[in-house]
Image 1 (cartoon, rainbow, N blue to C red):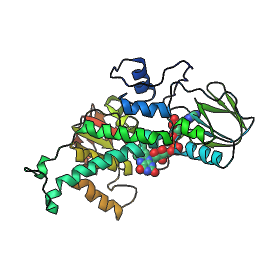
Image 2 (tube, rainbow, N blue to C red):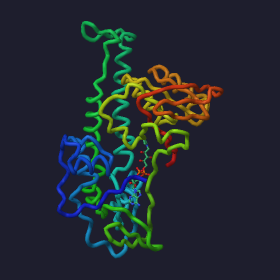
Image 3 (cartoon, rainbow, N blue to C red):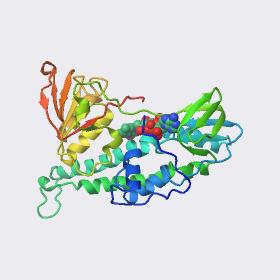
Image 4 (cartoon, protein in one colour):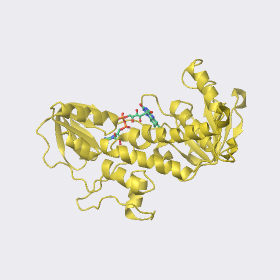
Length: 330
Ligand SMILES: Cc1cc2nc3c(=O)[nH]c(=O)nc-3n(C[C@H](O)[C@H](O)[C@H](O)COP(=O)(O)OP(=O)(O)OC[C@H]3O[C@@H](n4cnc5c(N)ncnc54)[C@H](O)[C@@H]3O)c2cc1C
């Protein structure tokens, strides 16, 4: 469950950019909404998807045809598309509209992947007979991680209006900021006290990365996709727990940026199935320098990780641990 957005009183100022980590807005953005830094791009994002000065509709419809709880892809699509077709609909958002996809999933990960691919291609230019500049060697490729992250934030901010409250309201759907709960078979209450009657309800409350019950994990500095896209410096050595699609995408990308990446997986093969595409992906991961280890039993000591050697494990250490154990259908 994501941290709840505290309902803004009407007099709250809109988000504005600041370098001061201790300002009220910075703490709210970082701790309540897990969005950081509060630069121009993230300010644009937050003013769209979690506006501080937003006021919930004061006159709910007597009865909505559809109420969606959650403002990720599921809640946005169902509430907007039904409003566009003439239905009375409402959507309730307790965190960041756009959900994982816009904020901590598809959009930021694809923005990083594009940069990683550019770096990997640049290192192979000589293979294609291409030379850039006088020194032009493959070893001269370097990645400016701050610039990579800044570009990602700009892309996310550009897309944000499509998922923002204003855009959703423009379709005719009512947007409520707060937490929704069922208080009857046809009634939902929002945390500001608004009571919404419905004919149909959509529960689109999403999912989050699973944290496995492994020894020492809670003592190791780790994060999930929830804060991955707030990174300000490139981790020199990264251990990624999980080998699903998202984990491998990030393994390849951070390896292309120059991190020493180790993927830890339970199975002896990547993805959910053996052979075919999985084999091809394994070769691709190896080609950009990420290593993989399989181990059924793992334990953490600080950031170091030790695995059951009989299953091909051993010991690896990193400066940063990323848990990307994301259920395929969260
Ligand atoms: C790193 C990463 C990369 C990904 N890449 C891709 C990709 O390339 N392509 C792709 O198709 N998918 C991708 N995904 C998956 C995609 O992000 C999810 O499938 C999608 O976000 C799910 O949308 P959703 O609406 O079900 O849930 P979510 O996006 O999780 O949204 C649910 C929302 O509901 C809110 N909520 C929960 N409870 C309540 C409540 N009681 N009241 C009000 N609000 C509530 C939550 O705060 C949340 O904002 C990726 C995911 C990750 C993590």
